[in-house]
Length: 259
Image (cartoon, rainbow, N blue to C red; front, side, top):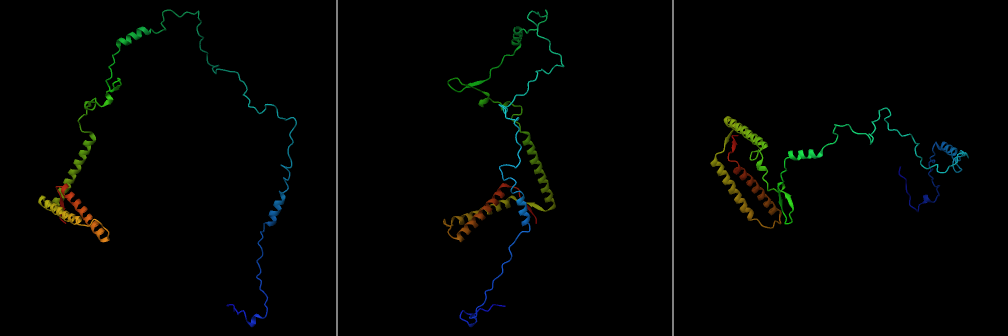
């Protein structure tokens, strides 16, 4: 039901009315409030002093000694070689001892060097070239003046990978030729005559010349949509004709389906 609103100056407003006070809902209180208060009071006064309530008093006998915090070396252990179980090597001979006679323990380097030099093959000097007036030398092999590649065994021969590729191309061409022959026997396709191919090629070139002549007559400024559209249309037709002319000139033999 809608509330009736009376004007300010009305006889119904002469009688004072009591103001209706809207009661507020009760304030929210947690059901754990008392429990939290009790837990807080339990540990509140446990550490009022500086530190815990009970501290172990240090003993007067355990006082800090001088240099007690310095690092200490490990205890010394008697040194051993670790071969106590194995027999020791024989002692070195004394100065007064003489070696046994008739046994040569020393190498005769003079005779050995003489024999090595007699049997040695003389070294061949490496070919060099001088590139400055001061006599600076460089190896001739790295200069590019030595013909190394023509002396190889397979010089002038076709590499193996090219031979394999050539054989693969030839095999694919034979398969294609056989497929074309079979299709021609079935009557599904026929070969385009050379005269007809030339006539088609001339007609394509003539059409391209006409489109090119129209393209040359266009305005240099393409400020309207119609001019721009006409220019793009002519360019698209000329590109298509160029592709067709290239196709007809590249392949001399062309097959046409009878369908």
